[in-house]
Length: 388
Image 1 (cartoon, rainbow, N blue to C red):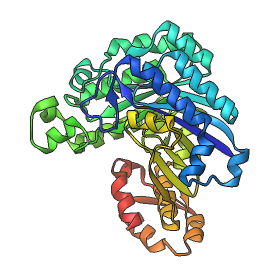
Image 2: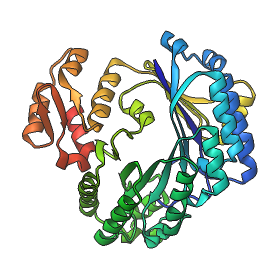
Image 3: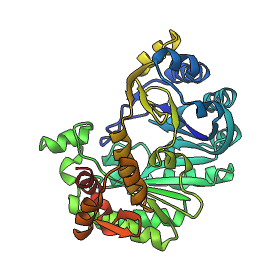
């Protein structure tokens, strides 16, 4: 059994206007104690799980950790020594045969010494929150970095030996135009990251920008957002541009050069087991899901007192497992095996599949069904129809 480890670092230098994550801005003095709490949670996880009523299936006893993902937030704000300490603790607490160790980083946080220390600690993949190559868009979104930081940071990582680099872009940022989006895609392709993620801007109550848009306000450039149709067009343009540049589209939001798909994130989409450590981290054992409390102070206090700071713990029902297998499986461009799904649920999905295929939303090839390529930008609507 292969196991993924996720480490959550919920701290940033500033809060982006579109961010709906549970992250906070804290002083640097809070980072070291937080890293120590994460180490303690990893070290004592077996006892913490037992007292919290979490039952790890027997294969976990023989599991080998092959991927680690350090996300956030901005985990590149941590002192490299603290990152190394966390990774050492994983190695001491689990049987490891690491193939991929990812660190999320913001371009402006990358320095020569840091990059060298990251590589020395075992980090071999860095995921950059690039978001845009337009300084106008970056400034409006509240980002700390600028275009020049991207061009400075990528070579520093490569010089340190970290060549597996991923770039994120967001379609739909304030002031984004068809021309600026095209330039961002062109500049991204020219820098040749091994992996690319493209996300559509989410407008909801969870972010300052989202609330402003929903309330009809003007702050945060709320009235300078592209339309939904323009965002969908940007996504489709990204599909074609990245395909032309040799990237394989393997998941709705993700592209990779051959052999560089995110091994860790594939575990989520394939419903494989992973354990999360840190405030707000989620875990999945195959039969149970649980999540730590988001508040970092409450998290650290619980760990110090010997309690798992879990605020959610649920048994995964057969229906939930089936829905997840369909939903997560269809996020992958390879699709899902319909016969396997129907065997598991003991019922036919044929009528629903045929209806959605007739509407041009799904494609069927023998036993395999997948989202129609031109409908990927409205995937959530397709999932709702299929699971109804």
